[in-house]
Amino acid sequence: MEQPDPPLVKDTTVDAAERSLVDDVRELVTDGRTLLEAELAYQKSRAALAGRTAKSMVGWIALALSLVFFALMALVMGLLLILAPLIGGLGATLLVVAGLLIAAALSGWAAARRWTAMSRRLADDDTA
Image (cartoon, rainbow, N blue to C red):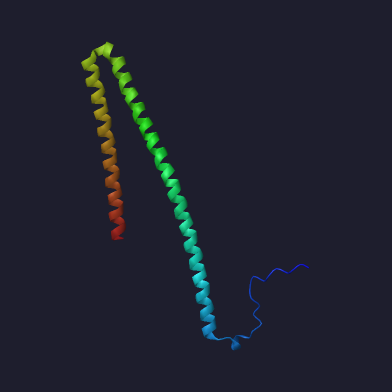
């Protein structure tokens, strides 16, 4: 014998006049509590997933940054080796260091401009 599926919604054959307001409020509170528990469980599982993903992501980012660092060091060494026969060891070193300092200054200048622009936008948002 097959049993029919239970209905998803209770049969509301009871007349509204026979229902108690207290029972309706009690049922509403129960439904709200169930919804809150489900939402908390959902957000907790999302946070756990984000935490696990962030851990592995940090490791991969650290590896990528260290590989970029070593690639830049290889580039600097290559520039020194290429320039040394042309302008001497001291000249090659001074030229590479000057180039790196100029690149660092330009990067710092770009970062400062972006910081200033962001600060201006945030200050405008606070006054509006």
